[in-house]
Length: 197
Image (cartoon, rainbow, N blue to C red; front, side, top):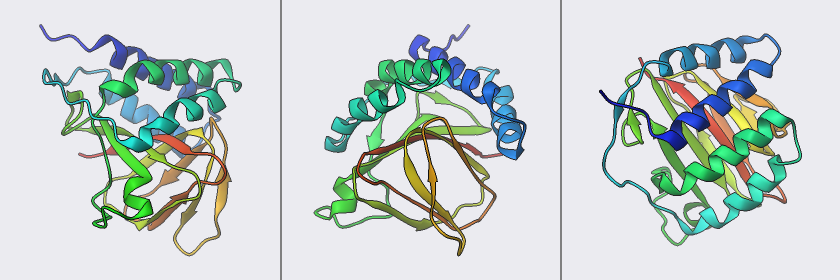
């Protein structure tokens, strides 16, 4: 019988604990649905898929920024610290300029879902990291998405203004909405869930 990777299991539990502290809202409902699906074990990926990009040097700083927040977020940062070196970090395919600041200043990693530590048909769970003073450009996708912020940054949706999200806060992207994010003086680290069914 398959079992879930310990570091992954502890991270998912810590993420759910933060979600449980949120006030009732559409994003809490969405993330709760994702966690209900993740309660069913997917197919573990037995290969070593770990890959750290140079920008990952900012992860310890991002986790430190979260460590003086709520007990739940502090625990999430701790568990992500145990997990991130096992993840497949790669630049987004939205940038083809391999010498550009954006290509070298950000990375995404899949935690569950295709290419992650565990195959899962309903939930693509991942993380995004952006070095200071960079913008992740406008993009959109059919799956609904929810972010949980570990270290602060700004988001924009549609033609709206930029808005700040601090550690422990969330962003809810409905299907196909145009959205972007950017970092400020500090790196932006956030984990996200996409509903892929």
